[in-house]
Amino acid sequence: MTWTEPTTPLTSAGRIQRSIARGADDVVERLIRAGKISKPSWWISQRGRLALFLALLASCLAAAIVYQAWLSDSGSPGDLPGAAAVGTALIAITVSTFGYLQWNDSRRELSLDRFYDRLRLVNERFYEWNAARELVSHYWPNSDVESFQKAMYVYLELDNLEYIVLRYQLGFVSRTLLRRAVRTFSSRCESEAFSSLAIQLVQGAGYAVGTIKVVEVLTRLARQSTLTAAVPT
Image 1 (cartoon, rainbow, N blue to C red):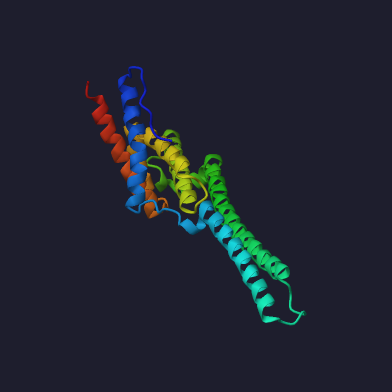
Image 2 (image 1 turned 60 degrees about the horizontal axis):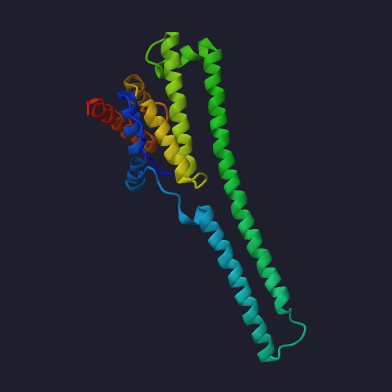
């Protein structure tokens, strides 16, 4: 899915959103090429796993055919297993191996989801327990409720962005969904207050280096798009 130019006239705000959305796909590709978002390896992608599975099945079939030809040409004793039995055993091993890989993927995905579930639980406790909020008050610029809520909202957006980036890097989501997440975060950065707070908060809350780099690029893109779209055409 790529950005499609609208046919109706746009307001200044609309031009900003159009500029941000138009650049989101290019930003994703640049981030991937620069290594700020690592591309999932071919072997852990679903396409790679399917190709591996089909290649192994073809190898099993070829091995069974060669084995049958050897039995026929060598006049081997009849107590040796037949080609069908050997082929079936090889296929069973292949299916088991493929099943293990899929099971291992599901465990990694489940671990990632559980981590963010636990993170959400901690965030909920900040809302419920004022004393806990005061204990780690360095996470929000000021101690008033309004500053806390603004900071927590930005943290949620940062968590969502990092979550999708990590899932993409592990091969669990498509690049289309990654672009969607980038567009969403970029549109939030249309707000200068959000953009400034995102840059400030992403630096000191345990986010991955890759996430910090992505946020830096997206906030810079949003600022440039805002300045460009604000110029009358």
